[in-house]
Length: 265
Ligand code: DHB
Ligand code: FE
Image (cartoon, rainbow, N blue to C red; front, side, top):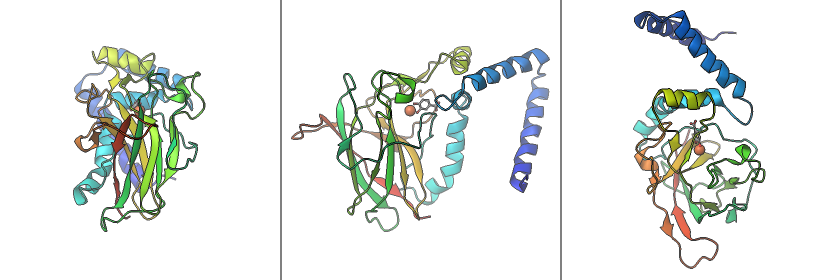
């Protein structure tokens, strides 16, 4: 049954779409071209590929909605970790792993990085125990495991739990820039807009703990290309980080220390 919020949204949407058509004297041919593109995106979409979401991302809609949704949080508690878009490659069924284990299986040229930090309560500044940290990243060939038959299921994904000191830590790779999929409807739209499909190097993170506001975000490598022209507009300054050389740990060549600050609900 339609809620008042739904009625408000749909009538506003109809009004704006009608205004858009009127203002631009939209023709039947133009409208059909748009329908074709959305249909193409729909036909390509399944549980491994969300082309319709990709279209929204290319026009900056997911980033705008993220900004609107979390603006209040950012204003009222500016020290909490900033949010960023989810993107189309999250999986709910990532394996639960122990801290200090690795999410990397057989990644050619992957620079192994020890990512770690403390999950903190924004108000008390105290470590938070038992927070879930879900991470996923693309391989050095620019593909997430579900896009790539050569990667093991759930490669470069894992779910970790902060310990009694709020600590989390795992081994991953230094992410590399890569294109969003551009062999379909999204690629056509990018070409029409004269835009490249690249995203700056990033690691996806979701932090969740009962009693706290969950945070969906992405961490970006300061040295990456495309920080200024991310094809899906997700970069925020506070999410740009340094990967530093790690000495004395044979398991990794780089270190990324990143504390995650969550706000009570
Ligand atoms: C998009 C986001 C990603 O993180 C990614 O790796 C590819 C595409 C997107 O927003 O469409
Ligand atoms: Fe991504």
